[in-house]
Length: 166
Image 1: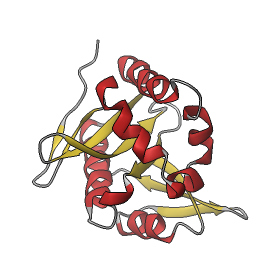
Image 2 (image 1 turned 135 degrees about the vertical axis):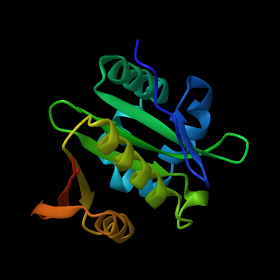
Image 3 (image 1 turned 180 degrees about the vertical axis):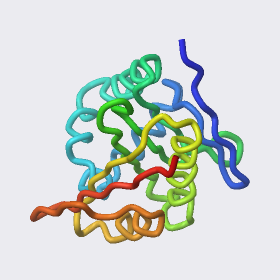
Image 4 (image 1 turned 30 degrees about the vertical axis):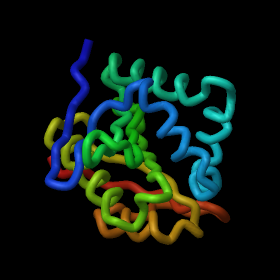
């Protein structure tokens, strides 16, 4: 079994989300903006026990070395949001969400930066992909600040990638 990587910063701790945190994670997914900007994911977790299924799916990804679901924790283990990466060996994909009360405080930018830095240093992948709805200006701004660049657009989304220096 693989050990889950814990990432420490001065402001927060990125560590595995446990089933005990399901109710807080549910608060992230119940937010209107999260529903709007992660509709594919929301439809999966909207089922009974959907949050627990989401967490256990990432437990499987972690055991296989294919992905991680990091919780962003601050001040006595308060869960603020998450950053996830999946399909590391094939098409590494990043997605994330923050509890509405914790937005616009720099946590997500720092968390994404820390995850990208971990992936780069551990050489788990050479590139990370993500997609963002065009109207999600805050997320697009954060990703561009962190060096992601657009490689494709459609009517709704911008598809971005970041090459990790090796």
